Image (tube, rainbow, N blue to C red; front, side):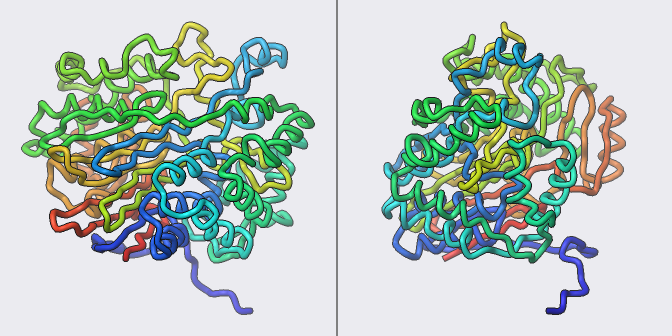
Length: 538
């Protein structure tokens, strides 16, 4: 067979995406095959909840560089005239303690291996969402993902690029028997899949089918739990079947702030959605639309830093927080944050955040149901642990614990860590507008703020809002900006004291999706130009 002479990872000329409109249903994800999996379930009689779960399970297979069956997940669901929140982040193993780390000669959690692994919440999220709000059996909902895993799929270009980057970084660094199944699965025969190469995960197909037929119980109480437990015991892991069996996702009430004449909704801690809410609540008192681009970016950067200062000090498993989450979005607190915005770049009193790998997706149907959903392995492929015989790659979310024993986010057994992944939702006057999100570690609340300002202040359509050049606060006064932001804007930010670094690589700036319901009931969708994103519409 003749290989093409062209390169699917190189694009010399600017491309253009337009807003996609549909009436009966829409699924927006970072992968065309995952979007189609969700649409397939819609066409078979499922609703938006079934569709988003089908797409999420498919993403666990077709974009393993960012998520997997062993991920965590969060969701905001609009159903029956109300918003519902699901926190499916997992807790730490019972045996994960500071004393255990010290016994192993460690002062902090490593980035990879067994120690940062917490209980995966995604399988429980899929089962819980379908059981409460879905229309089809979980077996039918997960069938498209299982087929992709068993029959194989061609790898998409951006996924292939991230796959190669990760595997080349991990080779020679992730050693030991616990990592051998990881390389066997994701670099079969020592080869890293490239764009268009076919990849199969038959063990993952069996795991999905076991999860589907048991309503998720196989993962937490049955055969998959047994295999996870055994492999952990053999290779130095702390995660046990008892930890898995003790896990339950939690239904929560989303929090909101008013921004312009909309309500912006995020999930409460242990997630960092409250960073976006604090920043937007502070910015609501400023006339951003009348500012030039540099002044607007400065104001947004300063509120982001102020909000992260609070979150990285206070956000944790809510059972251990020192303050009520609602107090952080109170009128008095938001006004206090706004008052701290100065003319010069401020040096925040927080450490540098870490980066991560995540998928964000959303879905809507013609009946009015809408879902904002996010799922993540955290650092790209996650822990570098694949449980043999299951195709399950495990996340490394525990790395976000603080090692300061006085911190509310201090490492502790059966405790949930600070979480970066955040789904968002917009309403207006109590009526649903739609789901939105921008994935990418600590970029996520920054992406939420930037995309919403583009849509709500500057009246740009959802696709233009996602296309717009972005920046990311890194640490201190350091800011990473896309070159498309423009030399004039960058120069003005530098004059205010921001230490701006410029890049043509869109990878650090997150990947977003938006669905907006029009007054006539039609759906308008947009997807991320920095990814392999696609909208499947009906």
